[in-house]
Image 1 (cartoon, rainbow, N blue to C red):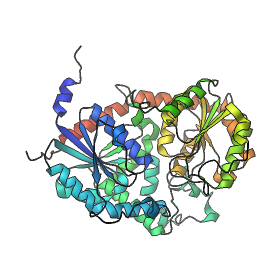
Image 2: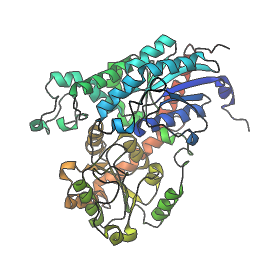
Image 3: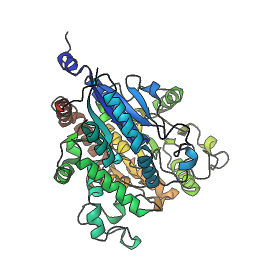
Image 4: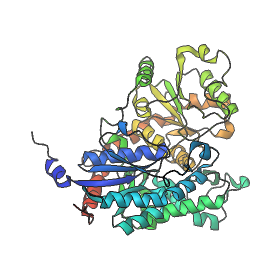
Length: 472
């Protein structure tokens, strides 16, 4: 039987999309998922990447990877691990933008003018900001941005000038529980702030992200219309550019989630297979957050004392002052035996889709939030910084598919209490609401669903650009 997409694929043969991700897992991974979506629609994809957090091209053999050199040959790398280890996130982003501004210009020009396929457009992470817009215009290629967070958090970032004028920013401890009347249902403590030694840099990074989106030829979102419809209307009025909410990215193709299985993943799956349905608490706090030893121990005892099976991801170096599990009391792991499992990494998409998982204790990064919603798993929310606070507020008070456990209340008895509340049989209707959102996520990806229609529009939009043909 003839593939109905064959004529479409032929139309796009020889057309290429260049992508420039931010080199953090929470940004790089959705960009790679988006690259897979474009590739499935017949485009070839080139990934421009930094030498900082260098990716493994062998895991994505259907894309072309090009390294963006950080400086002149022979010069010391200003973004070595030793140089960046003491930086806060905003300082690191600022350094990345400075170090790669000119090398990115040279790399993009070389790709576009160097010979080969026709370039349709550049897709850059929104946080790279206005520089990528200026460079793309100079070289003559259209630019679309990927916003890796949700629409609600973007609206909060876009409101920073107003929030400063109204006195909400900088945040004052005495006002933490005050509602932000201009951004319901957020409270002051929910505003997407990142702690930094130079607060002015935070405002500049946020403003550059928003202004860079305004200068784009469109914004791609890893979210879906039914989840954040109101906020798309708000964002659209602020940015006045085409919007394409085509998420959840990872659900577009059945073979995307589980294509990187290793031996440790197999052991984790075998362990999960032995547990009762919806009995396991899965705990993971993302790729960037670090916790104090005291918090780590309270989490350990809280999970153990909840008397629920648990799978806990502890990244090496994520506990300040420890390499990995040295802080745990002698015999602690042996004591809980097969009831708990601690690993350094796992395939989160596969874990959340496993029938034995009944709750996800998360930092509320957007990728984790959307993945949990897509699988109908209730959440325990412990946000750390930035948009995680916004996401947690929506999880708990708007979508009502989770409970909050603030870091200030990170005590073992409170942890036990929240775990048991989320894992309750009825859970105050929480599990039913989770399944309703899961169904909406599935429907949006159906043939007539909103994300599928927006993806068709995105493909047409990209093909409509005046493509820059390489010199032969």
